[in-house]
Length: 203
Image (cartoon, rainbow, N blue to C red; front, side, top):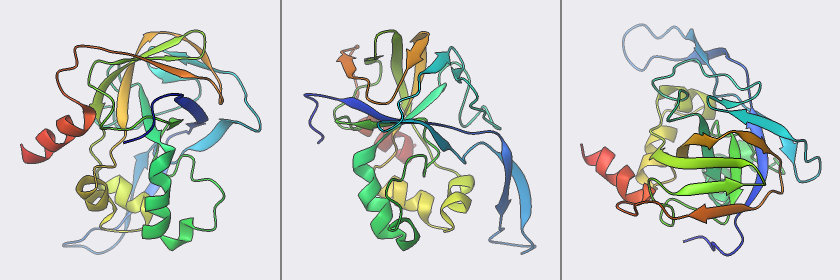
């Protein structure tokens, strides 16, 4: 479990919808293109802490192609623990040479000091001085994640190891920047993000 004493926002990522190449596992083997917003680039880091606006539907200049997967009111922002990056670097050596993995799994907010076992569905996250998010659900990876990671087992690895991250709704709009403190305000505390993820996998 991560240390929750001083949770912090380490980086912010956003991206436009672009084509991503998908290779079918069965039938016609020819690759095809689908629209995806999974490719994210850093727009605020500790070294360059640009102030970014976040509205009800997410970060300024961030786009999503399929709102059933990412986006909309309840999945406006995707948060991911930076503590998970070592796992992905070990699993995929092409990531090992990167100083940072910000945005590698399609996340918007790269956090430190929070994880799926210590956060509960319904918890509020106060980020910086203005923004308030509500934890809504864990991320369920799809075939686009496999394409992003250049692997047909990436989604399976995320699921098996509980490295889902979490989606959040925007309770109060505001601006945020890398380096902002994150304060956790307890919600109903009925089920953790990790427990909800395991429930989804069983169903």
